[in-house]
Image (cartoon, rainbow, N blue to C red; front, side, top):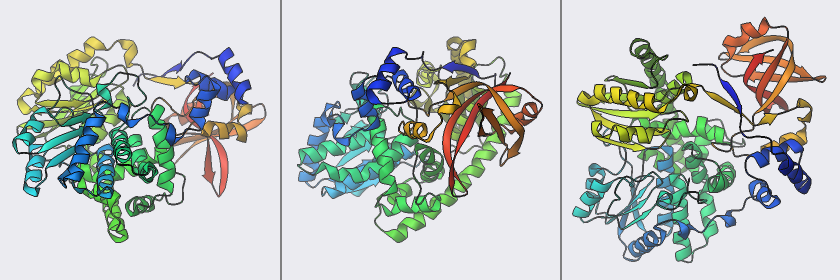
Length: 568
């Protein structure tokens, strides 16, 4: 990977920040951060720091909501058998569990179904529809999928089954002939609900149902734990409604009454701890995802919806075992991918990576593609080939839209879907070579040399003497952190090194710095290979970091988590 380029997120906010600091009694650096993120009036500060569930937008503003609610109420009234049909990732699993619990609470006859990744692939499938027919289902409600299922919805209709779609993915050139379609992407851009995850759309649908039936909407707040799980795991922008739903959902996880979620926190060593989006993304989500990646994701829905304590702990332990198996597969597949890259890819010339193998498990190739993007900063497609067909997962960099690139290769693939940063497709084995050539050509046409330089975005300069408890308390109020609301990153220039750097754990770099008499502990995760150059340097450094408080030996300490540094 080329050297990281440091860039500031926005120009300093100047007068706006000074006025905001005075009006809201905030430290100047905090006011600057807020203003640079578009929070530049006292009322916006209040909404950012003290959001309220009651201030969420009306769910009926989502396109198609009234029709969907009317059709579901009709199914409730006529005692129709409903099947909630989801996806096998965390967003789909939590969406399914949420709507299953809500419809069950409202008295519906309801089942749920998730496709088997290895057999059916993503989305509404003929196998799933056949299962619905055999079970006597009259109405399918898709969640986190369905917007591109034109042929599948027609197949369901031919079998006498009606379909309501609640999705958040980009629509295709034509829409399915469903009874109703709820999808914020069908409305105008820039609305508060525009970037909702699938589980966010499901929560809005639940709100609209409760409101139409005269039920107490506050009951739904017990399910915000599911909303936070799915939203954080789906890596959608944590701004607007996503941020509000996740903020309250994180609190709900800590006090959840769901036996399955309690058990999952227990086996993940998170019981009694404050839950953050990072812990969802790196600890809880991989365990929920594991069964879907390796087989049948319905077990994860059962975990999140069961009221049986004994079943919950058994399933949680099963997910823990599956996650360990998944990690082993990850490492094996990554090693094979790196070996293939060394033989087939010129990372100095090529502007994309496309790999394929008949030995790969399609449940882990997306994870490995993400790791390759981190390592090489190139759009990456990995294809697991089984017989005459391959299933591909792709991940991208900020300057390259995968969905558009797949559209350019549409005549070479059987199916494709996704969004800018993550996409998937199916392809005939004999088309892989042509796809590889076309995809790399598209990348070469659309990516300039500047696009291939990884960027480290910095919020502002900071003098470390402002790192007081009050300042850290203010920083914590920016949470929950995620895309478009990242943890603030600062740079301090010409700061003194203290003592000798050393390596701890799995290649992590630790050292100390001093500024104006204050000494700070620093840790750079995965930076152990830079210890030698730092040890040989007797001068000062420019340091980019995230200040954070960590628990150690029953004490809370300030630590600078290093993002990068330069020797001066």
